[in-house]
Amino acid sequence: MSDLDPAAARLDAALQRLEAALESHLLRSGNPVALRAEIAALVTDRARLAEELDQSLAREKELQSLADEASMALGSAIAEVRAALGSEGE
Image (tube, rainbow, N blue to C red; front, side, top):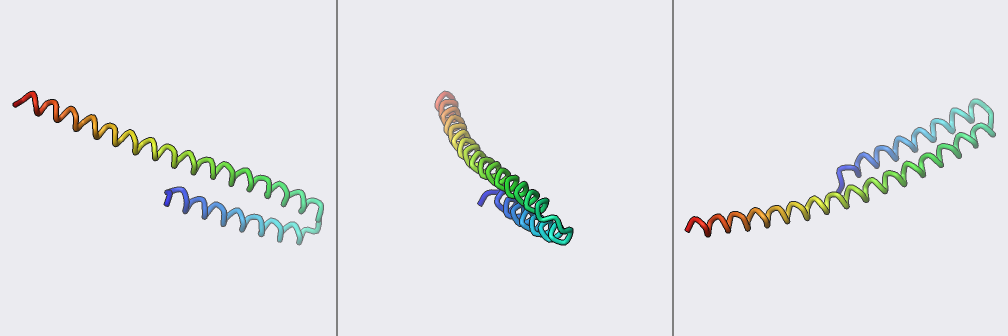
């Protein structure tokens, strides 16, 4: 599980609550045209944010994979240097 997954879930839940609150407020205020425009804007924003979050999560996984590869390569290089230094001392 990624460190960003809980944050993504909280963001999604907060956006859903915001949409519901805005819809309720606009319904009470009485302008259905404004309500539809606001909801459309929120849906568009939410879709954009969801896409950006998905891209960020994919990038985080890619970077973690690269970091793991670099760590393994560094570990191998350290082992080789230690082995070379050990064989020189004998």
